[in-house]
Length: 306
Image 1: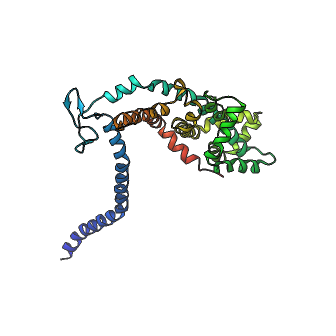
Image 2: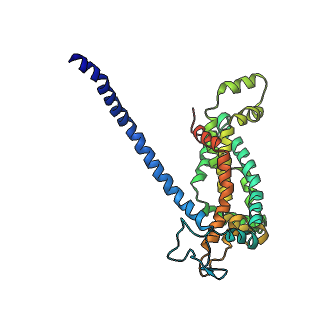
Image 3: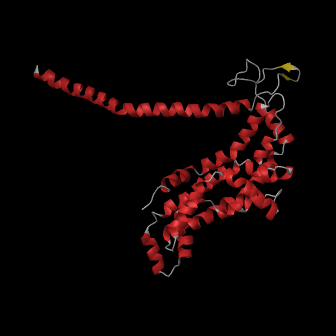
């Protein structure tokens, strides 16, 4: 009898261990179920846009009746595929020209702006000078100002004083001086910068400028790449700025303005618009996939401070 109990004890213990492991895994399983559900919710609109971009715009095509997107029986999960929307975008609209204009307008603000923001961030984080904290908080307070407040004064300044209307200069020059938010996030990383490296560099006779260029910038590469990605998204998707300054000049329009020029009188050409949205998404998607590791690491590092 005792032998049977001792033989059954390991099996009972194993059963109890399985129940305990399942109870410990239950919160993680529930978390994964919620994450999968949220991921599906995020993917459905994108899949709908992608599927719609390959749909026929009208109910007839070459004399043969087809079910268009406006038809009540339209099924976005399964329908006749056509590439006419993409072909029409490139043949009738200046998609490539708008994309090239967007890239040209963002190069200087993207790289020069992040560099100047990094210089200011390093100065506020590592240098000691009178009024440093007061200047920093005043600069940081500008983040609280909505863009619509400075939009009209900026336009009057660029139009009447600099005479930069109908030119891309208002989209390029101000961005080269960086932004307060970019400076703040990079400063968060520099606050945790090891003092020993600075002291060792100073002992070797290196000044602050050399420390910044040769030590601080290379070590802060993940944070800088993160800010480049965030700045890219902001400049690339900007619509109001280009509309104000280059909206009346067809040759200078950005990609967002070109996509907005698609006529919507009568039946809105949703398949054509979705094709444009998919094309506009490609650069952002490629950039994020290529720099995902740096982006995640940069977000984490920007929260480190002393």
